[in-house]
Image (cartoon, rainbow, N blue to C red; front, side, top):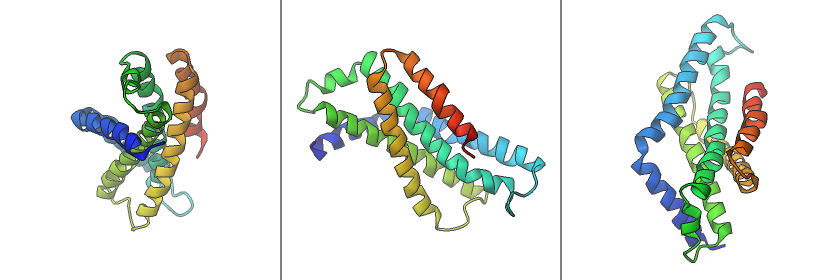
Amino acid sequence: MRLSSIYRVWQRNWLHFKKSWLVNFILIVIEPLFFLVALGYGLGSYVRNIGGVSFVEFYFPGLLCNTAVMVAFFETTYVSFSKLTFQRTYFTLLQSPIEPDEIAMADILWGATKGFLSAVGISIIASLFGQVHSIMIVPALLVVFILAFLFSALGMIITSTVKNSDGIIYSASGFIIPMSLFSG
């Protein structure tokens, strides 16, 4: 694998992300913000302290991880499947000297990057709400990047094995969404 090829494909995704920044901002920051406000503060106003902390302080780390997982997984499932079948982006990339494993690694890294950016975005928003209390958010975000990388790779594995988008729906509905609801 050549790092320069991986970087070029990653850079292509970054340029597309910058071009459609408003839609991406809504999906990766505004949606988790709604969850933070609705569940963290709304539902949290009815829940007493959990282990000596408020419900919103209890909920924020889970929201941070869940946001990164969902964004990374869906980036390498639905978006990658669309690039493979409808947009034919991968077909075009394969006409260049870039190898398939380089494309896959670049998209996995891109999914992890986008998941990480969503975690950073929700952390900035949460800090405005007073939920980020220390510099320990920095190593936590590094762990979140690793988590996003893992689920981005899982999404790419699923995308490489499914025949149609139903296979993605089954994995998301049968594994990812229940995991996010019941993982505490």
